[in-house]
Length: 113
Length: 114
Image (cartoon, rainbow over all chains, first blue to last red; front, side):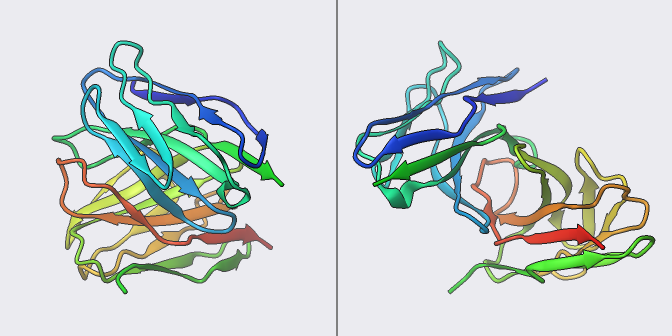
């Protein structure tokens, strides 16, 4: 079935370090891909999305490129801040359905000064 | 500001008791969803509703029930049949279905067993 796999956390970085969180997917069709972020004690917020191959989603210095050939949607940021500490979820959904989101397990990021 | 409001933030359930989690949205979204989040896991879909007076089971509907009498409201009842209800519950909503509209989430309700 359709699924999303993320790298296990926690990922621990110093402030201003480069961030990569890997995400790969398995899908029978051509899904849209999303990154959501969850800050402690809160719900999820949409961080960025891409709806077709080679699209790049970007927001708040984060970016991810939809790579159909490697079925990947890795999240990157050039210089992380302490305020980026959160759990990041990769997800996919298909058009023609009911907007069902299939989530990865989440990757916790901890950034220290 | 528009958004999704979940209440209460924390909820405790006694054995054999049903409890209801509230979810209200003022985003004028047609579709609403309930997810369960367990530690170290992603979100799993419990129920979803595409339109008023209609709802469908998600992946883990057993032990839960919902209603959708108003566009703005989608309450979730955790029944006594749900043997492991301790989790973080998230409500979400989106415009329509079938066109990959992003889902907007509330801040969640944490349910624990007394």
